[in-house]
Amino acid sequence: MIVIGSRGSQLALWQARHISSSLQTLGVETRLEIIKTTGDKITDVPLAQVGGKGLFTKEIEEALLDGSIDLAVHSLKDMPTGLPAGLTLAAIPEREDPRDALIGKPLAELGRGSKVGTSSLRRAAQLHALGRGLVTENLRGNVDTRLRRLDEGHYDAIVLAAAGLRRLGWADRIRELIDPDVMCPAAGQGSLAIETRDDGGAAREIAGRLNHVATNAAVTAERSLLATLEGGCQVPIGAYAHFEGPVLHLTAIVASPDGTRLMRDRASGSDPVTLGRELGERMLASGARDILGS
Image (tube, rainbow, N blue to C red; front, side, top):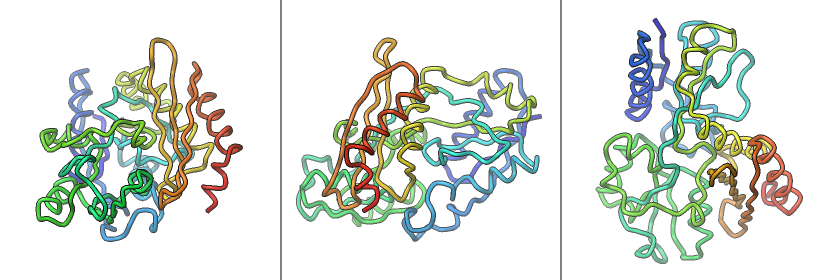
């Protein structure tokens, strides 16, 4: 029996059940354990003000370390680049659509003063960088809560990850998929992460059967860049890698929160860790350090 730990949100439960179903297909018996994280308890404050990514993983990782669960399923973009000692990413399954999506009005219909809801500094900064005079307002909560707030007329549009909408059966609400050259996604967006103890136990070996090699390489490059820039939720950073044939292409942005400064750079290579690190170092040397420190 493999005990799977997950947050209790609608999307998190879909993700955990998806992995559970995949493991059961392999003949592995599973049980789901719901764990409430600090991030789930704080719903009225922007993430950047309360600590960022680790808010959604800390309690789950503690449960892994104390042995009360065997495996955790996360949205990879919620995970810090550094893991606690004793834990590892055992597998990254095949990625969903990594793009951001607009619900409500498309970009072409959003002009000066239009209100766009998002909890992400990265999304807000890139919307401001368009120079259209858009107004961004903090929007937290589960996907259904955010959609309801839009439907109640509080916003002209909201931005959510396309992957979450597709997974929950709300793809028909997507008005526009934003090209990564217009809005660079978060590192790991659209990907799930399966985390286990790094103890040579059965859970790590079993989870490893769900790993998707190309996805793992792409998100490893993105997270390598993020680690080099030392970025989290407090800084607008985007990273998106994809393969064209055998070559891995990585695009990244670093922006000021108000979008007045935005640096975009690209690189290609074959080794994901090296690719991410070298692009990050080049961006730091070319002015990203000044933006990050502002």
